[in-house]
Amino acid sequence: MFTEQFFDLLLNFGEDWIVKEVTTNLELNEVEIMVDYFPMTEQVKIYDYAPLRRWRHLDTMQFKTFINCRLPRIQLADGKVKTISPPWADKHERHSYLFESAVISLLLVSKNQTQTANLMRCKFDVVNRILHNATTRGLARRKDEEEVFEELSIDEKSFQKGHTYATVLSHPSQERVLEVVKNRTLEACGKLMDQALTAGQQKHIKKISMDMWQAFIAVATEKLPNAEIVHDKFHLIKYLNEAIDKVRKREVKTHEELKHSRYALLKNEANLTAKQRIKFEAIRSANFEVSRAWEARENFKEVFKNASVQESEAIFREWHESVKATGIKEVMKVAEMFRTHLSGVLNAMTSTLSNAMAERLNGKIQLLKSIGRGYRKFENFRSAIIFFYGKLSLFPLN
Image (tube, rainbow, N blue to C red):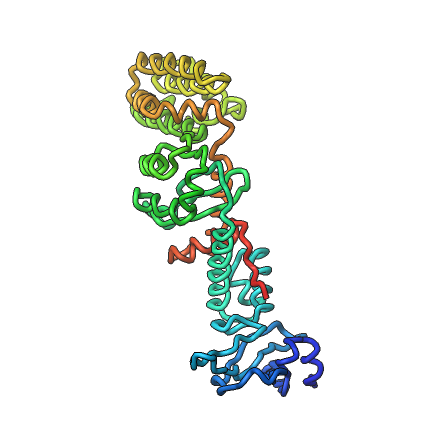
């Protein structure tokens, strides 16, 4: 059915490698290609041959195609024996470069390892191994290039149910993930920086955006000596929103009017529905603490409309004093936290850097979790995130 000459031309492994035999199994729809090594130079002396090995190759029409070969071993000048690597595959793998490239291309489109395995007619473990190997290869290539980064974002992402987190380091302008580690402890964050960046790269960082998680701040201060910390505006408003909701939950026990008012208080005023607006106006006109907590949040937003650090600092201190005057403990706690980390807050007010891109990546990572129906092992989760969102050079160079 298929001839040796056909596959010799099709595979084109080089003049030293010749297709010796082709066997077609019509029942299994499989093609077995036997390849032999015949060196064209007399300088190459064959010592012996390794045991027969089999590699999965790209399908030939509807037939699964396998390459079979006993790789030759040669004796070196120092007496050591070396196995000659085949031109069609990595010597440690059981699939060809072209098969691996096809799997990577399909994965990038489907983002689903199970479906990719089904379409490529191979086991899930094969696809998973290719994904891990491609990620490792891509990270090694990026490390060899040693790119210079000036801005970073660091954020957390839930890994499994409960309080199990992953910490994600990303590059905002390139919109790509640099590294992911399990947990968000001080030790984990330090490991993250060292895995993602060399000592030289760490010194080049000028800004890093983050929330106020203490481990993030401590590691950035230690590892990135020339970087300004920028406390992301999104997270600053989030802290105030959480404070408003805590006040609402406390007051709703004694004020029936506050029931079902959560979204009316937390949404931007311009985005309220007609029903929510009625609820919102009723709450704002009443003398509730939650109304004053809402006003504190809106006043804080005004701080971001100033051009200079000096202006922002002056307005922030006025805002801080006004919050203290309200006596609302939940909002006062947040205001005091902002004051403690004032430099990072002021940097957020005057810098264009934010965690907006990191939050978008978090959304993409969540989609990845949904498609994969969760990840039980962290290493699988990490490799998948970096494979799909690391913008690495993933393909084998053969």
